[in-house]
Structure formats: C-alpha cells, structure tokens
Amino acid sequence: GAGVSQTPSNKVTEKGKYVELRCDPISGHTALYWYRQSLGQGPEFLIYFQGTGAADDSGLPNDRFFAVRPEGSVSTLKIQRTERGDSAVYLCASSFLAGNNEQFFGPGTRLTVL
Amino acid sequence: ILNVEQSPQSLHVQEGDSTNFTCSFPSSNFYALHWYRWETAKSPEALFVMTLNGDEKKKGRISATLNTKEGYSYLYIKGSQPEDSATYLCAFRNTGNQFYFGTGTSLTVIP
Image (cartoon, rainbow over all chains, first blue to last red; front, side):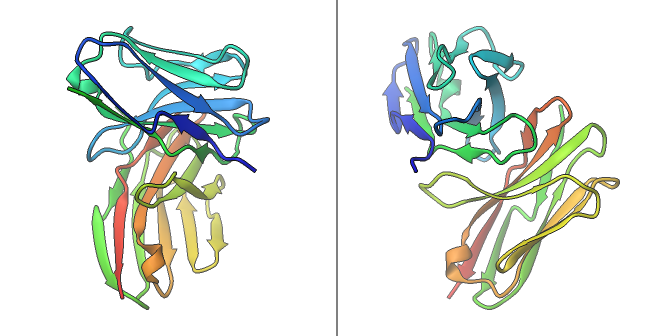
C-alpha cells in the first residue's frame, strides 16, 4: 500500500514569502506528526494531530507557523513571512493511533529560504 | 530543554564487523523509546518500539536493549553489511506523547 507522501519534495522561496507543505498520511492513520530537521540536528517536534484537531502544537516555533488537518487525513503546514532560519527538511509521520505505535515517515520536504 | 544524546556521531566499520551505538535519554516521564534507520534520500524506517525496562528486541542482524531506569538504549548490528550504511536515530517519547530525537549515529560499512 502507499506510504506517507509529502509534496513538494523541494521548495525554494524568498525571504518573506508564504509557503505551504503538504502531507498525505497512510490511509486510516489517525495520528499525524510534523517535524523539522535542521542541518546537523535530529528531527524536532512541531505539532501532532489526532484526527482533525491539533492535540499538541507546543513545538511550533512562533506564530508564523500553522498547520491544519481539516478532514482528518491530509495535513498542510503553513509558514508565513519565511525567514532564512526556516530552511530545513520538514518531515511528516503518521501512525494508526497516538499510543504505542510505530510512526511511518514521509520522505520530507526540503525548504530553502533565500 | 530535553536532551536525547546518541554516540558516537559517526562510525566506520569493515564489512563483517559487529558494532553498537548508544542512545541516552531522561529516565523520568518515559513512555517509549523508538529506533529508526534513515538512508539518504529515503524516509526514516521504524526499527523498534521499546517500552519496558529490560526489553530486548531483534530484527534479523539488528537488536536493541532498553534500560529505562538509567536512561539508555543500545542498538547492535551483527556482521555489518554495506546495506546497513545509514543514519540510526533514536527518539524518546514521553508520557505526554511528545517525541524527542537524538542527532543520530551515521554508520558507514566499508566493503
């Protein structure tokens, strides 16, 4: 079956622009996670959805970052007024439930802010 | 800030050698410890989810142990093969369902 997919795979934008990153989780997975990985670091938790609602958004670095999952499936991570420091790989993962289950990761979106 | 540390940062071994690396994490609010294998240009692949102190898990030539009281996990690879070359990530999951990743151990197996 299809795994987690993310689009685009690469995004280059200019400082100050708005970007949207999309994640398609595995069908039937209720939990969805967003992470950000900067160079030389491990993935850093951003936000986690259980169904349509954000169960924990404590990892979002500031109010320029926002994520939605309106129908409990596809999620979009939105970044306003991008800054050079936002350049990173943005990873999405999904799991069947938010409990003690494996997460399945997508390939990531590499965002470069010039 | 919660610290999850992995060592060594990188490792080069000869084909056929066995190797191991460490993940250390806080011993409080523990829920689970996850290991992932991440090859370049691919998605991280789940290896193990470990929850109980003393847990040992095995998948082929790869195994892992868990000590929640002292806050560490070891990943072992027996008879390393070139296809084992990847970055191995661990993630500490707390009782609030938050994940904290280490920076990974980059393994290169030389044929």
